[in-house]
Image (cartoon, rainbow, N blue to C red):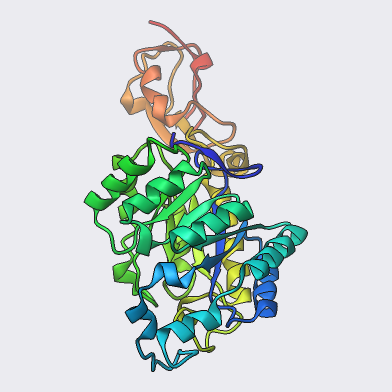
Length: 353
């Protein structure tokens, strides 16, 4: 069984624990704290486990040239990329407000720390776990520093190779055993053929002592539900109030009704997992009693007859007879009584020869 650990207070992941569902708000709040709070409430009411944001300290994440680059996209909130990012970035005090609001509602709150300074702030903020975005997954020094902080970690794998993920595992494991990998493809929106859910199987084979999950950027719910059916212990999906809003992530996000439906469907799928033991279930008994087949006499069998295959048939019979899969147990035995054609046959009707 894969490792299970407490990702957030009182909430374990891995093993037979329910899938942990992260509603990724990211920067779909349009720079408005009231929209951010509205999205936290949406996540809670939909049944998500965690509302997540993205925190950057821009001068630590980008160099001057990157911040000064003109940004003319239809999704831009400023003339330069720096102006755009600053418009969307919440202050430390606003993050404290958002965390307090999430705690008031009863939903876990965290953010992806997009640089070392942001990660240090999130540690100070006392988030339950760190989420490492795909853009930092190959930043091994950053991963080691984060791991040493001692908080559980969820690490996405977009834009990475398996060899890089092996390096990530070896980097984090000595300092922190409580981490997991998410299969992720960093494209928005993501085409189904680019999802590669089978990579989760590769991770389970290569890293059998950590849970595996899925971070999705596709449209709709089907693939995320499939990921859970394939064993994802965590799923992360972007959410929005309106897919038509300005911003790169909205199109690949789920609106409130979709998030609610997704989580409902995930919980139904989980109920279907059941047991590793294959046996007749109590719910099947009415069908078995009505339609289950039994061994019957294929012809009249006088008392004292040695039973052979020619004497045996299989039909739905009243009363129930011997189970067809065990019909060989009847062969070579002698009938104790006359058994008429079509009559059910049981071991009690026979004696050993």
